[in-house]
Image (tube, rainbow, N blue to C red; front, side, top):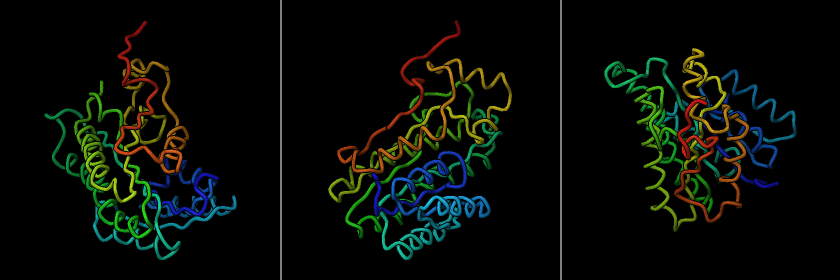
Length: 257
């Protein structure tokens, strides 16, 4: 198993990429700290992992709050004796997030508070724990929109994910000699509840799909497999990267046939 005796903390663990990653990491031997604000779904996930023979614990945390982030790291170290993998995955996408003229300041601030500040706070409190463990892997969920503009405008989300990518690069350089690797997972459009709520009409879905060379939305389970590579020693010489798993959308701008 690729994560045997490793402790992994995953934010946004109750659904989507986070849930699939938690299940996969547990199967690969990791002790999972599942973090979310949805306590019911988070505890159900932990029960599922345990029923499959894995080790997991749930921690409630609003990642935009400093003390909550400090607390989730404390839970990981207190429960499992350390922290080896930090997956800053939690994020939000507002349906009211459109262009700069129409997007409200409230939507802008809420999006950046979770999507960017939450990653910063995870690293702020998680890096000292990784140091205490002798190193480890940080994975930050960015997006393909950190690399190119989206056909359907979502300026706050795009700006937040661009910030995640820049933050990832800098942290990777700063902490490379401490045996701490930092990489950004950049998913393409996924068939997850979050994106489907945003692309809430067939017209919006087709506007996104037409630009994906593979012709389909990705699956959360496919992102989990990419995260597993970045978390494991298989990626021991990989840091500061844009790990893009996007069905080819950033490689080619496809037009309708």
